[in-house]
Image 1 (cartoon, rainbow, N blue to C red):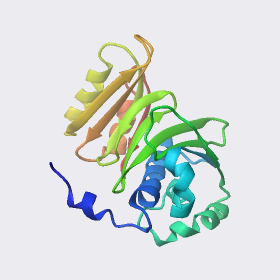
Image 2 (cartoon, rainbow, N blue to C red):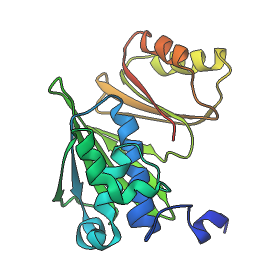
Image 3 (cartoon, one colour):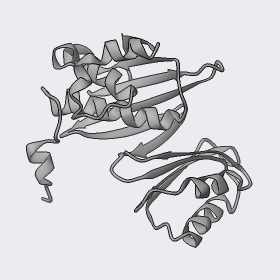
Length: 220
């Protein structure tokens, strides 16, 4: 077995729990990046252990802190509610039941000033590790361990090739690529993990490609 020393010792964090505290903060911080723009309200749907035992582990404060952009080792995690109030951010928590998900799962819904919203579902796997499993109605696999591009595009021939070709031209190496689609010829999603962050100028070029709808970068 290949086991990282960080999985044994756990991450540098504010306790008490690597899964319910550090992982929760990291999950929400990653979800914030997926949302991609300023939001005025966020709601947290808590599943399984997050809902049942999270209160004693500070899970709610950790999730709110992560949504504010705080890292899992930030001493201000316990001040999340006061910090949210300072930013005029509304928040709420509720219990949620989802079939076939990890017991430490949360669904974050970000509400924007223009009336739109973004829904991100993910889980804390232990040792501070996370996995984003769904963005709005699109299934994804996003760990946050490498810089990643989240792309929504029409399912058309050549779209993925155009994206990977443009990255190659700029010397960006693809570590992992996952493509999903709702149905043939309809909306599709692509998660591309890269060895280095993608410059903003290149992201703008990707957004101008035919059949591309959105491009967001997630780099923790």
